[in-house]
Image (cartoon, rainbow, N blue to C red; front, top):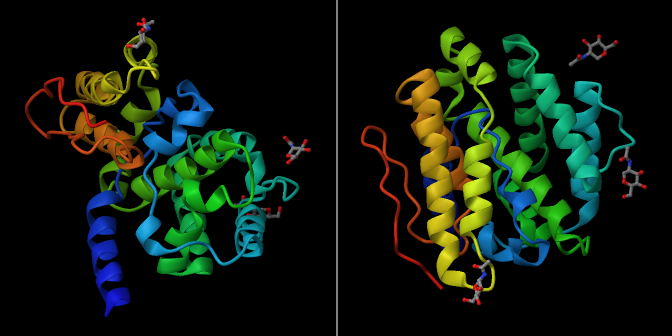
Length: 246
Ligand SMILES: *[C@@H]1O[C@H](CO)[C@@H](O)[C@H](O)[C@H]1NC(C)=O
Ligand SMILES: *[C@@H]1O[C@H](CO)[C@@H](O)[C@H](O)[C@H]1NC(C)=O
Ligand SMILES: *[C@@H]1O[C@H](CO)[C@@H](O)[C@H](O)[C@H]1NC(C)=O
């Protein structure tokens, strides 16, 4: 019974969660490694990964499918993520292929093991490096988002081209760095929400609504272990939130 409930909840989470594509945020890099455990969404209710071999094998097979060097392990997360991003941005066909590879990766685990293994807390069983665990988990969250709920939207040629050519988000990044003061927890959630609002405005401005909403959702789905009330609105401009969740 317990298991069924979890899977049902999980099914809803997936239905709600998985959306758009290359709205890559860099909050993992901008957040002190020791604080990532607060920021990142975990799946503690799902149970933990039974063993690292499962991840190693799935990662190896996935790289082989994409012709990425199989010398890279999941612990080379930052190199891997750069490589995959470069690959799927080359063309719509490459993006579709990366999404196929993501389906295969997911199927290697099956639904419950995927969520048990590919999250920051499970990965921390096998490393002491929070940033590596966060980057690997975040990479898959992005791919989940882009290759599932966001897929139809993203493979629309106009949208694809626009999102791929969207300008950088240096302003969003520097605002986050200024606002998030990790010795003052009350500043964190507003800083994350403002980052999301900033991404939304950026993509709405460049690609038109509702693309900003997808950019915002992609960020929202990765974070919020600590912030409970992050939100993205399709139409209206997001208002910065002042609520903090210590
Ligand atoms: C990987 O390389 C093989 C052999 O060169 C090629 O047939 C295949 O299409 C490549 N796959 C991808 C995803 O590029
Ligand atoms: C991959 O990570 C290992 C350590 O886990 C490191 O020795 C190796 O140089 C990395 N490879 C690349 C290409 O970054
Ligand atoms: C960060 O927060 C602490 C505690 O509230 C405060 O003492 C410090 O001045 C803040 N740092 C910055 C750069 O605002």
